[in-house]
Length: 379
Image (cartoon, rainbow, N blue to C red; front, top):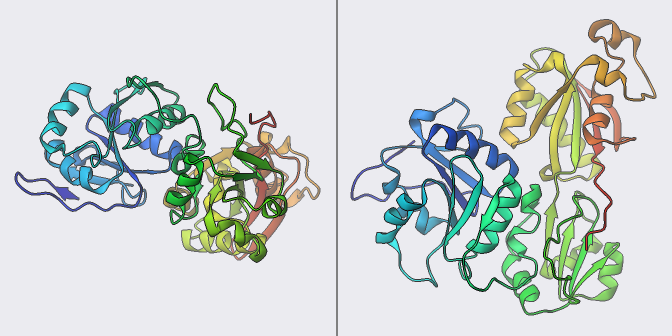
């Protein structure tokens, strides 16, 4: 916990590019939800709103006035997203402003989550782009008051953030961003994930070119690459990453079952082994899905919380609506469903087939399916 004292700048644990801060009961509830929808934030809120799972969710608690926390966040983060009234924010940040070329972006979100306001460093600090992306993620209205907006193109460090996409590495974010802004030939290869990522009213620039496969992109010899995939890429594809960024959409569902009391460690080991065998990224997992008899299974709850995944359960009747190749009378006898991991994966992913139908190891079973996304054209 962070103990705030006058005249001291506290130490903070930085794991993400942006800080998300709340100081009210409703703000805290919203902040916890926002962190699930927008993966690039470290969450901070007051200790009096502690719920017991903060360590698992990497949430940092503080004791004292938030005014004393902001100087540390101001120096440590690219931007701050504050669920605090605009007037209070202006008064608190005024003494710590330095220069528009150095100050981080500052956003304000109202307590009900209706509006996201770009307050500081809209252009150079990236607050305007972040305002639009964050508002899209939480279904709020963005408020940007600058007279002219930034170039209508892709913000590389925020690409797909509204959908929960995360990048594999930040190493090439800056040079790839430079290629986009300087209108160099940038290849975009999308293998999975949401398709409606171009939301500007103007057409996508000709310098951003979409390719169907990595092989096509390699042959085109782009100056930079945006690769959207849940796969662990092959050696011959790594040439695209010499100046490229991999984005991981939330495209994988893990259908699971287990014996009562199975440890989180055993469950996670099975997940890790299975994803490695399938050459899939753990960062692309969206949810663990199972039968509602397991809604209080601590192993599942702990693994889901630890990885910031959704935990979704279905009734036996809902699971039995899914077509199974190998229905089990034994499973039906004990659960009322003819299967657990297989139909849970299909239903949650809205899929008709599995990437892995079923695998059992020790006390747990796992099925893997890829989410079916809307096929509507991107641009």
